[in-house]
Structure formats: structure tokens, C-alpha cells
Length: 595
Image 1 (cartoon, helix red, strand yellow):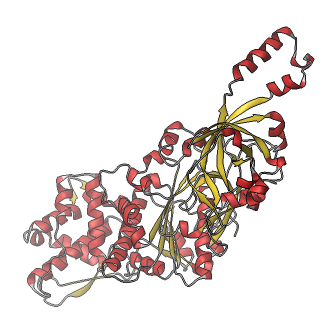
Image 2: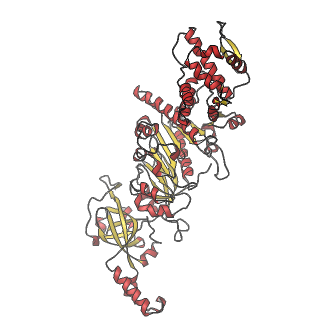
Image 3: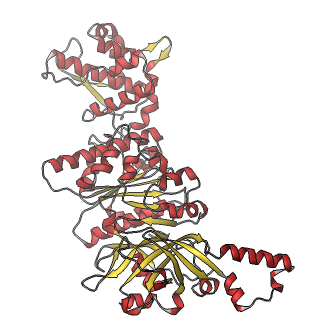
């Protein structure tokens, strides 16, 4: 009961209700009380409590969403303007007590967020609606102070032992002249389990604090790993390299904080060469282990880029039929693979200095080793023989040879960044998947490749991890927790729901049962498919600068209460947050990430 007594102190008094229903309350206020409680900013929390102390077992939680007219509003306006007309300035007016009080009166419109009450165990609880309300004259309205606010904004914590991470402090407004020392601002905590195996969104303009908040959440999950026996793997698709490497704008990276738990991969060959602890994620297009995957990838990119007849025929070449080893068909197929590798070399796909190809010449039965240049010379010399074997060789030679003074293999050159001869024969996707299931943090630096190539890497890795988890699920095996973080999600996620079987829609709909959580950041909310948005439980919304994005945002929860503030307030780190266990949106100043 002490909770309501503390809120209902005289110094916290704001005003009285003059309208009340199940969703909206209107509060009669006076300038005197506004100053006494140090302001009533938009979005601040108020509480309506019964005047009768014997009945103070519940309080209706309110949020200020705007001003409201009181019945006397028009009369006040007429009286004031009439005084302006009669006097040169307002300072010359000699106002009596009643008139001054009359002029200082106004109204507030408040959203009803729910009810705090004491349950059967005499424990303070919160319900998201109003079970009953009395006539408005029975209530006083108060502005809770720091200690009581801390209980209100962290009402989702059932016990002190729950895993949590401080993410910032309560902040109502950009202007803070009344609270320069943050005397009203309690700490805001994130319940770590709200994020694990859930969907989390970070919306806001560039440099508004999205990445800083993501780093805080990564830290919270890693702390949970360290405190418990859980092994929650985390992978960050680092589009700009800010998580993987330090930069001048941020005070340290995730790698700097958790070096011992982190495995780094990069799309940059030069970065991989400079540090032996950074692995390259390129494919080795010459590796037989991943040859089918890399050829299929190349075919997909070629057909997306152009559909010329010679391209179509090249993509239809059969390299991977199941022939008996040492049969004529098998030997011929192996020669096709060698010719394909020669085409790659001519398209500037580099190979190691000691790279050898193994195949048998026409007049030999036992395969022998050839250097890449020896193999090219062989295929140039024996072109007619090979072309007479089948149409696959004809298609390959169309790529291999110069046609009408034009090097047709040049169409492959734009994809050479996908390849590195430094990569081992093992599949990087398999290595990353194993690391995640061991509870490691994987940083995947994709800052040096195009958006199109980034998409390919992310699509394939997400699909691989999803399929491995689904395989475990269907086999009734224990599933590991995995968290995925996507930067610039508008470049990665689909724009619509035409293909509900794409990997991101499946992660959104089925990820929870597979213990896979996704966190995504973007400044373009409307570019995210509705399937993903509808399945998102946690929302971190920073400054946005246009109404199109706000219109999409307003469809979810009660973000419409903050629409004009989100556009107007461009303070770095100032966010409106709705999490899975929070029953209402909380305005928060996010704490700066520190190593």
C-alpha cells in the first residue's frame, strides 16, 4: 500500500480528472502545480488515485499525449484577448486571485495505459486495462517521482534475480531545463530473455544510436552466457565493419570488448592477409568440395544479370551427374570441370602458385597433374576434338574462346570478389554454424563488397543455419540458441510478402521454435515486409525524418502517441522502446556503449 501513499504526496499533485473512460482521461491542471512538479512534458507518466486513502489499492497509469480543452477554454481566451485590447500590455493588468487562477487553468489529454494494483498475495501488479472506474471527482492525479517511476517503468521484472541489462534512463523530452541533473530519471533495464529467440527492430536515421543499442544487447546476452551454462551464439552481419574493427566515431567495437569469445570473418582478402586470426569468407571456386555450390551461385548471378543464349547454355552444363568412377562418362565429366576452371582463370579468378589440375589426356588412361597454363594450352590445341563430344563442351568453349573479337568469359569478372585462393577447402558456413552452436560471437565483416554480394553471403549463411536447426528440430534433438543481427535491413529483407518462403519470412515466423532470434536495423520501416514487422516483439525507435515511415510505425502498438516527437526530436540515443514483457512504450535515453 505504501507505493500509492508515496505517489499521492501533496508535492506530486498535478490536478483533477474531469473526463474518464476506458481509454482516455482528461486532467484539469493549473500552472502553479505544473511548476511545482517541474513540468508536464508530452509522454510523461501520471497516476490517477482515489482520494479516499482507505480505498487506495489501485492507481490508473496515464501518459500525457496532448492538451485538452476545458469547458472554460473559450471564456479564458475571450477574457485574455479582451484584456489585451483594453490594456497596452498584460503586465499592466491588476489581476485578482480568482482571475489569475482562471487564466492559469488548462487541460491535458492522457492515454490510459493500465492499472497498478495489489493482488491476492499483496504484491504490486500491473494490468493493461481498467477493470472499473468511479466518478471523476473521486480521483486526484499525481506525477510519480524517481523511486516510484523506477517501479513503474520496470514493472515487467517479476524478481530481482532475472537477467537484465541497464540500457539507459527515462527521458521524457529533448528539452530538459527542469531536470538538468536527471533527478526524476530512473534507470531503465532490458530483460535479456525478451530478446533471445525473438524478433527485435531498431528504427532510426543514421548515427542516431541504433548500432550503439545493438552493442548493448549483444553485451547483455554475452553476460548471460558467462553467468549461466547457456551457450547462446551471436552473429553480426557487419555491413560497415563497425562491430568487427574500431573506428574514430565509436568508442570501441564489440571485438574490443569480447576478444576471447569472438571469431572474425571478412570479405576483404587484404584484411585476412594482415591478421591470421581473421578468416576470409570468400569461396575458393577451384575447390572440388564446394564446386557445385559455387557453380550454382555463378549461374544464378549470370542469369540475373543477363539471359543471352550463350549464358543460358553455359548455366545448363552438367558437371555433377552420378557416374561410375573411371567410366568414360566420368572421365569426360572431370574434363569438363577442368575446362570450367580454365575459364575461371581466364576471367581473373586467381589460383595459388602451386595449383595443379588432374586429368587424363586423350591418349592416356591415367590422370596426370597439369599446371593451369598447361591445361589452357591443351584445351586450345584440342578444341575440335572436345567440341565434337557433346553440347556441354560447345557451351564451355563459347566461354573459353574469344568470340568475334570479344572475350565472353569477361562476364564472369565482376564476380571475382566472391573468390579467394587463400580460403581452405572447408565450407565457411559450416565453420560459422559450429561456432554459433558453441556459444561464440561471430563477426562477419562485409564492408568491402557490393550490396548484391552482401545479400548472397547473408542469404546463403542464414539458410544454412536455419536448415541445420530445422533438421535438429525434426529429429527431436536439443536446439542451440542463436541470435542474428542485420544492419541496413532494407537492403537485405524482401520488400513484400509475395514469397513467404524466403529465408527472412521463415526466420520471422518459425525462428522462435528453432531458438533463432533476429535483430534488424534500418531507417526505412516501410521497406520491411509486413510478415517480419507483424512478428516483431521488441521495438527500439529513434529519430525518423518523414511521415511515410511514421505512418507505417503507427500501425503497431501505440507509437501514434509519439509520432510528432519522433520526427521532431533528433537527439542521439533518444528512443521510444516497446519490448516483449513491457506493457507500454517507454521513452529512454540509451546509455553509451563502453568497452
